[in-house]
Image (cartoon, rainbow, N blue to C red; front, side, top):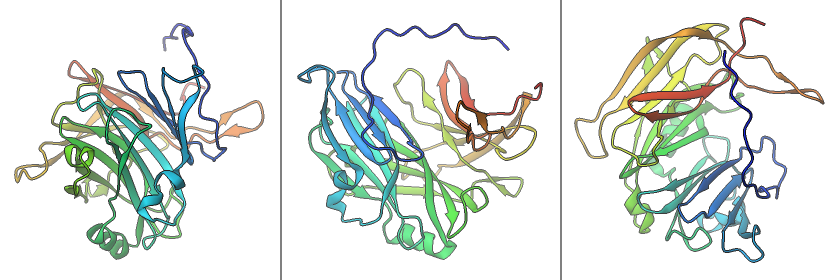
Length: 303
């Protein structure tokens, strides 16, 4: 292993410390105009370079208040946020409810490039997906988000009712969502894909691969692995080959062998107790010059 040079702090600002949810699930996006949107469990805040005094948050709300127009009474959690450099807009995601009868997937599109302005709010869990939840006795957990030139890409884990996420996994679902309809406040065209597997076993925690340049393309890749295995070297590369409405769109699954094995890590030792590391899943990934790079946790087999 090679150790990287210590990071150098150039600029900093006070973070979004408005709530103390566990886990915090903090996520952040920055626009080309240096506006910052920060989301945590369960709060949203906006920081602008034009704030007076400088460094102050110009807008803030609980996720409950931010999504109140949808009339969803369940607790909101697992927020995510993206900045779209093509449209110069923000997109916020959250989940609500943890049973098949109460679960909702929430998405919000900023109307302009000002995140402190108006937003278009949607509940993705309409009748069709509600039927999917009830039929399979599942609810949606652990959203991961990315985008293409024209679409928002969302993956979620379907988890069985009344079971922990560790052992109650059913499958990962991929969503395609039309961006332009969301930015203009129109009804959303939605497409979702189920039954994604390899060797008869469902692939878990599909992580969309972002484009490192910030300019998204068309096809989307996803990474996954066998995150709860004690030792494994399989990396799954999943490709979504087309856009919404394309009858030739396919989901192709490939598996590659890593040059080093990974495995479920132990909890990390902290000053006071330990920190749960969960498992060895792929946590984030980007594509640069035809090469995918990713980050995740693993046990160190040499210690």
